[in-house]
Length: 170
Image (cartoon, rainbow, N blue to C red):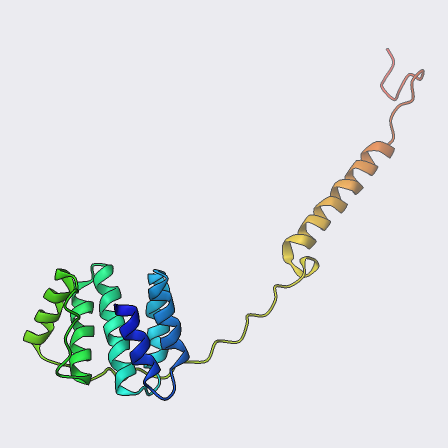
């Protein structure tokens, strides 16, 4: 029933906001975590009153599903700010009915003025190659020093076998 209402509501408006449509599809597919970001993007742009109402309604439904009663009540209040005569479907859950009645008691809120979405930050520069890192050259230095020390030790002067050595005779 709700899907039919949403389809009729969205079809009766001249241009459907793509983010609102994405939120509606995510809601219908029960991907609830994807709904709120899409709604935030949709509400950052001007919407027709019917689309605004549906966006706040979906927002209230999602907050109620996540047991966030204050946020759901605020979303219902904003829906009432768009349409003071807003009511839920007769088959709505008692939880939603209670949240809407609380919103009616508190009174409507004007739709939120959300700041426009900021453009994405430029990508971080790629990390420096390994040969430009300090620890690479430290390891190279240690390896060279160890090689030099090993060479000196291996080629150092030792008393050949069969000689008496340099000690004092008695």
